[in-house]
Length: 336
Ligand SMILES: O=CC(=O)O
Image (tube, protein in one colour):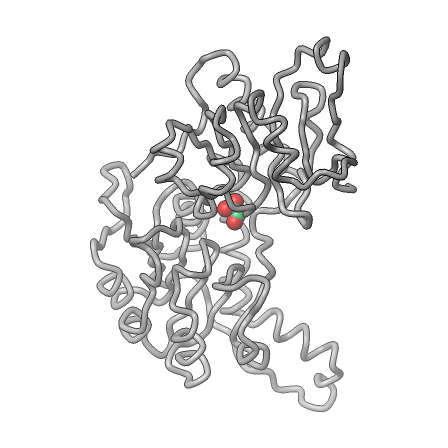
């Protein structure tokens, strides 16, 4: 959908007559809201507006009436933006992760923040399992083997591994991690997890320390948010603890893993493989990984399905409606 299609620019009397709440669409040019919200909200989009003003001047002109914004994808919400919007009271994130939003600054200014809640969780969990199956059974590598015409020349193809019975350590047992666990239990895997706190209702073994989790796992699945505490939590000690046959799946954020170390461990054969949907400096992916058949690479797609877009549209709408009618927000982000 072209970026401007779901945006209308109010002006003059039309603006006064229009009772839909005004919401700023905050986005980098390469991102667009993937759904239409115009029936409920009056969307203000500096990028799609046909004025000669700079985005800063445009925002300053509208600032007094901007109380809520939707930030599209990973578009940063930082102090420079918040300085321009003194009336802002709500930042609606359209992603599950909120590492692109300066939560400290929002809290200081009394601005509430919401995220996508569990709108993406099932799709991300499916994707994590798909990456894991792909790495274990070498599906993408087998596809390359067939497409490049190797099959008739070299009928032997390396064996993949069975998923059932493997010990899977999930880092972050939130909404996504719990969905991953549910799916892998059905595959006959044994689940353990690490998170900030033990979850009394989770029937899985808890490890307070990620290294202990890794020693006791064949696979690590990273599902946690990126925070100061989780930055590079998967470091070389964890990779050593996971060991030679160990596999790492990442559907969280790239920087949860020390990517330089991961590349070293993979190229030296010191861990068994990886399935990666996220990277430290997207869209840049370390070139060393391109030649490794035991690594499956994906361009941050785990969340993206038409169904999850519909679910996130509902969450965003519910949060905005709640905000504009002074009701409790649906998926508020808890400040640390
Ligand atoms: O990565 C995507 C998200 O956080 O929703």
